[in-house]
Image (cartoon, rainbow, N blue to C red):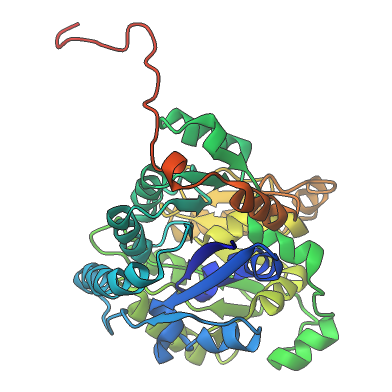
Length: 393
């Protein structure tokens, strides 16, 4: 019998990471792939990217309407609840052998909780990483402890997952599957990209990807300094939409007002994976607080300035410069990143997040994994001598 593997995708970002694992699972003769799209994928406000999935030829087995039209943390919390109710029915009827989740978005707590109650083994991609300024950090760790198979992007992340008490045989360093695009997809030439986006790339642009800092009481608290720094730049700017988090609407409105006052620059709601990767290849700098600046720009040795608290603690290659969320600190990092000396220092660098073979590693493990009777029973972590310390010692 075929193994039923269900995969959850909620946004443009995670779909670009899941594309090649989905492609390989769909082609595997021993897999019955079930694809569940939810949240921002179905939202017109965020480009209704479910159409991109359909255009790629994937069958969508369930569509979960759950994203509230909100810009608050209460809206985020209610989105989790709405998703949980719908997924209980979908997964209760589907009963896959394995449920595959990725990364750290808050809405992924819903399928994880439902699968836990339904005794469905969970496989999780991209655990063991750190982003101290976002609730994503806690979500990622929660998903790790609920999951039964782990695919990490780096060896450091693998060791961290094992240190959380997960058995080593369950934890596999696969690499970040988004990097498979660089090896397996044909990226656009500069001329093709200019035509598709109606952009003049004769001057390499600064790609701006900036999200709310969701661990702060005001998730847009760092934005004043960020936009002050942007105002001092004379480079062409290309903005990408922020995630569907509390504060995202305020950032979108601010970006639109900024570009209107500047009289040039573009804001894109969604870019498909190949177009986005092609843009990175032809960019001069990436600026913001996105995980993409950490995980993906290293593949092009693209200078990147990572701003503020959101990605604090995240492992990165030497193309990434961290800057405090102060305009003068951001501009100083930009000047360093754009210097000939810094660019020269990146020659020959490699991306610590993988080699473009993540999908095949993930599919191999999923298709050969033991059944639920083995996966669901986790062995407790062994305790080192002296681990019991009484109060006052």
